[in-house]
Image (cartoon, rainbow, N blue to C red; front, side, top):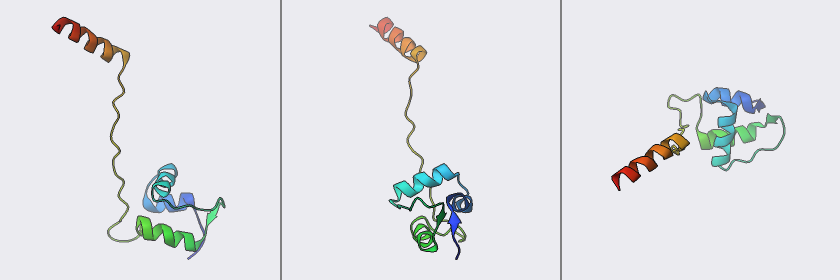
Length: 86
């Protein structure tokens, strides 16, 4: 196995490099600041996130719950409806 960059590993999994970085953080994988990742660290990533070349890719990206961001217009309509009902 050879040294690889974070971008190359992200491409193997078919995700963006920033998403890959978030997955490493959630999996508690700490990598050195070096540009290239050593084969030992690559094996650790494969063991935790799954081998991207296997038939069944073990990397599951869970959906994060959507936080509803209320706009002023929505809050105004809601407030008006509550006042009319009272």
